[in-house]
Length: 230
Image 1 (cartoon, rainbow, N blue to C red):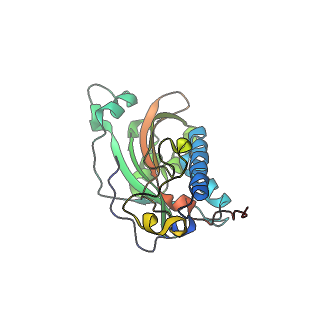
Image 2: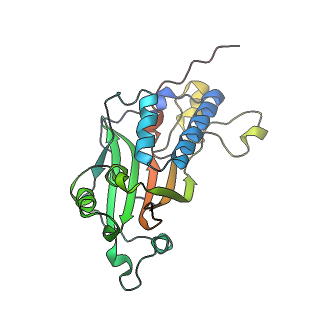
Image 3: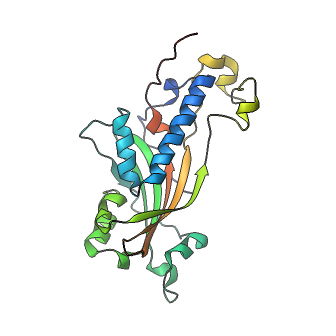
């Protein structure tokens, strides 16, 4: 759903940390599932992602994520999503504002997001901060004590193929270096792992924002634990 320009240079490639072995694929699948469960259980994706990065040594204790905003981005909200905002019939999507960002730190992009929000349902300082600064959305609207309602989740890639549990051998990705080099090759990772689409509500239940968040492999760019040989 999001359409972002290529990420900035100097990005760490997570692939060298992960090898094309069944154990590493299984580890990565477990970690992706853990991270998704945390994100789905909390209201602030920014806070949850920062906590994950701190835990796994990808952010220093005093480091925080920064929202890198695309200032000229424009996009209409898909009608099926806009309906969830319960917009006034007389105004429709004309009362929506759009924000497109990357959550970044140290030249790494950890998530990419599109956001449609209703400024009349926020305070004026909140709207100004969203339109004029690079502060992450969740941090700006935190005083609303908002709740998050998942509309849809999308798996964009899995380390394990369908019905892997019924196979005697997990084959490498076709047409890749993995197929030639076997388990010693780096695991070929895509630019995105999964996506969450959610509705944000104020504490009085009023919906004020739709978010589409897509997560990158950078959150897993750490050395996997060593596996003792049998």
